Image (cartoon, rainbow over all chains, first blue to last red; front, side):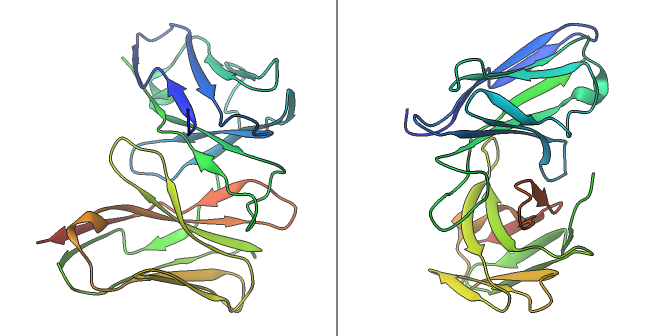
Length: 118
Length: 111
């Protein structure tokens, strides 16, 4: 597709359930980011990949959160034993080259996966 | 996590009016960005600012990168109903690729 594609768009999970959120970045994009957006807040950084390498996972809130991008394209964000505080929109973003937003390197966001933990 | 101070939190205006919103930070940023997020969508980049003092326009939108590198504002002129949405500022440090976002300004335009 033309943009960053995320699935599922909406997910309701029971507390304690594991969830997996998928991101298809724009074809050929080297950099991939995950952000978490709580209700009424701005997005907050979770993790960054350059190709298949996870170069920064400092924003992951706990060891229940795990992200991977094994072949350098599609990425999966996995949340184990979900808690109510995990309820948020999970945004994936990608950019063609490099990590920094510049005039030649726009970071594009997907529509997000809306997770509700009940 | 750290977030920028964005104001106002919400605005309710009449179609045709001008709008101004701003962001401040205790940290210096090398890049300031303004995004718009429609309901159920991801943020879409409106304007990017790369130099302190820079003033950039994109149609009816104008944004400025503060001279101290700790603030930015966004103006929307002659608002129209499709301007409705949440506007976010975001800052990016020098070699730090992480975007730090404000909490957003909810704009409602009354036709």
